[in-house]
Image 1 (cartoon, rainbow, N blue to C red):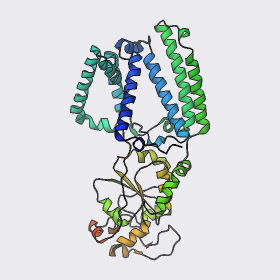
Image 2 (image 1 turned 90 degrees about the vertical axis):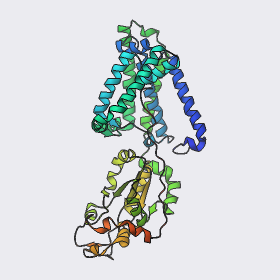
Image 3 (image 1 turned 135 degrees about the vertical axis):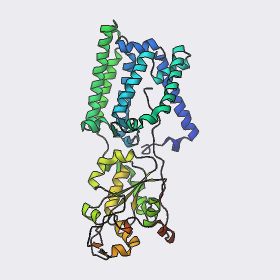
Image 4 (image 1 turned 120 degrees about the horizontal axis):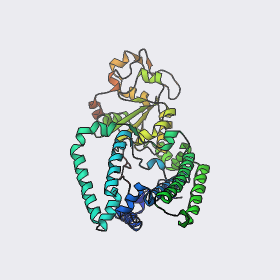
Amino acid sequence: MIPFPLHLDAIFVKFGVYLIFLGIGFLFGFVLETSGFNHSPTLAAQFYFKDLRVFKVFFTAIVVAMLLIFASSAIGLLDFNLIWVNPTYLWSGIVGGLIMGVGFILGGFCPGTSLVALATLKIDGIFFVLGGLFGVFLFGETVDSFTHFFNTSGYFGRVTLMDVFNLPTGMIVILVTLMAIFMLWGGEQLERIFGGKDPKKAPKARYTGAAVFVILAVTIAFIGQPTTVDRWERQAPEKQAALEAGEFQIHPGELLDTIHDSKLNLVMLDVRSEADYNLFHLLDAENITIAEIPNNIDKFIAQPANTLFVLMSNDEAAATEAWKIMVAESVPNVYILEGGINNWLDTFTTEFESEYCASGKEGADDELRYDFSAALGSGCPAAYPNHELVHDMEFEKKIKMELKRAPSGGGCG
């Protein structure tokens, strides 16, 4: 079985990875050029329903990519959570789509096909690329005047069709495949009506391709996508040993030092009960149940690359369970507060807290061992200790920020 996930850098040196990307780009451009996508009249003909080859090629590419992605995910070769999904900005996306659509109609190219035309020295392609570069410059100079609309208008984060329709991945794959086949058939009918083309002269192999699509879609639905338990079992041999060695449990002093590190986006998740959370919690810690964590994985993955997650419970049991879920779902940079809130209070309790709580309370594992007479929440010194306290502590620093996959590009090709 190929390592999960597959890192090209671990197989090829960085220069080799660049060559792979260069080869993919060259082949993609070659396919576009040989398909006639460097010819603006061919591209513009789709808006008159006379020649829908652009629609057919890109719709087919989308479906092929979808089937291969979820087939690879189903058999454990690919981690779908590590694939960058562009965040959804609904209204700014609609405006941007309209602008690009009008430009496509007027110029006969989209950004990718215009570069293919430029590479083949098409005059209209050259002017389109120059116009695109001017548009980029104009956008960069004016974006400050509509930043709020651009960044927040209709923002939904990382959204997929599975989220929108609340359906299993396999069902979505089948429905999208059937929709694609219907749309491709509809495209042929439009070409017959408006372009005078005879569908009977089209290659018969397209029927075989459609059948393969449906069979593969049904197979993906039958196999299903890996569950959190499946994902953890794949990573357990490596991660469990590191967990037991204490590599992911950080000392309260290291967490305090991290709280004051402005270079990191620290997200503290308190997985205790609401009652314990109300009695005492760290400043800015978010109360979340273990049952809610799977529903927030997309939100966690969408955080900036400098995000560090620290989980905490009264001791470590609940935090460790939550850690396994997040690690299994490929959330990077997740750590556990060593000894939990009990250890934090042991370390940072001041005279102020001593007036409201008594230590040494008997309790089972992962129960709060401090008996509070009032709900302090984060309104006490121990919730946000003085950073100077770190200088008098001795502890091993364990936080090692991992690189996170980020967006690499976009567009229609």
